[in-house]
Image 1 (spheres, rainbow, N blue to C red):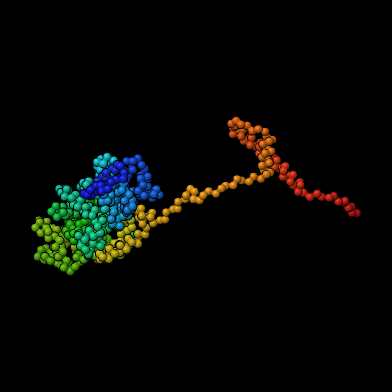
Image 2 (cartoon, rainbow, N blue to C red):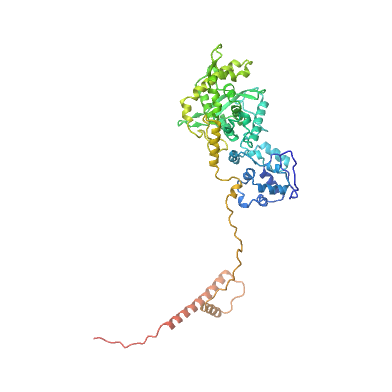
Amino acid sequence: MTGGPLFTTEPGLPVVPLPAKGEALNSWIWAIARTYGLMPKTYLRRLGIPHRWVTKAIERDLVIQPLPSVMERLQADTGMAPDVVWGMTFFGLDRELEGACRRHDAPCSACVNEASWWAGRPVGLLHARAAWRIVCPDHLPDPKPMEMADGLPLAAFHGQVRTIIRFLDRAAFDPRAFEGVVGTRMAPALTVAAFVRFVFLLNAYLSVRVTEFDELRDWAGFRIRRAFTRNEPGEPLPLPPEERNDPAISLVLAWQLVAAPLRTLLAGLHTVNPVHRKTARDTGQLMALVCLLLEFWPGEMLTPLLTRIALSRQDWSSDGGRTGLAIATTAPWSNDPSHSARLTEAHWTHTAWTSVLFSDAIQNHHTRRVSQFPVAGPFRGRLLAANGQAAPLIGEIRREARQRGRKKASGLGRFLAKPAPAIREAHAAPPQPVSPPIIPAHIAQAVQFALDAHGPLPTGKLRARQRRAVLRKLSAVAVRCLNQEAWREMADATPHRVPTPSRKTR
């Protein structure tokens, strides 16, 4: 709800319930209908929505792509400011998120109870359909012991989660929001829909543990606990539900891999074993991480890892040469006692990343245009994988795919695309005079004969059996009369035959 005036015009209705904070438009319309004892269909008809438009999806249709004519009539009825009325919808939402928001409905029970208590009536919240709100920022759950080390500042970590969600709330309606995070060149490949897909991807195929959190930089360090495996045909298998992280942890990891990719990859995300005890399990985890990042990272994020300066060996005076990029990413901890271990870990990750990236296994799994991972979350259709392509090209390919898939109008606008059925009037033309039926004379004569033969009919109330007996008797007399009349006509029509003498032959 905006900070401007709540009412701007005189309401057309005498009583208007005030909308609750964060309430969805459909919930407020239902409240107005209940105030006057009306069914929602009846009040929607007043707003210009025919009954045939009120389907099971009417709640989503009112929130996503509402009709301007409906909003104008609602504003005239309630007198609410346009910003208030439109603020209860997803007006201006990125078209790429519309389908996911239609399928997403995950209200926070604590927020719903609080809003309903303050309003004194049932309230449905708008952000329950926000697909990018993976967790509720106001009621964040405490992580499990296996997900976070002891002694870390939980309040600061939750503050980072709220900061990310506030950014996504703005970026869902601003296509250029990611330009301030990754720059103008890489922004076309990074949309809210693609980022949320990446979060669901990490949550389903990679389990990590938060090992540190720097309150000064709002930066977390992670260690991989478990990564996905492949079946015999080579398809990736998601982690069991009990092994997956809380969505908030996957959200922070995905954000750091976008906002600070090199520092997070080399200095903030480590495999399961320490640097001096690396095994084949660590290499397998790094290979799984490379597969996940190639689905989302554009080529501009991979280039700094493969340049000549980044791969050049430096610092030969120590126990071995380190890559220049490993030294650069660990520079913020140069005065920290853990700097030597961080530098060694970053050097191992960088060299292992380079060898894994050009391995045959990675090349075989990342030759297709469509993502090899099944759909995760409320999205439909597999994401077009980045596979190291340039960000402008990725954005153009995904934009063309969305335009090809958008064949039908959504929301209430899909009814406007269809012609309305013709309405049949009760009396489209003046009624024509109906002529009485012509009864043949012989039938009328037979009926009259049957009535005369029967005598006066009973005037009292008869039982069904008695009525059937009277009708059978009258019918029998009438049929006999018709048969006699028919035989008489046949006898009159037969010509008289003159007898001739017979001749006998011998």
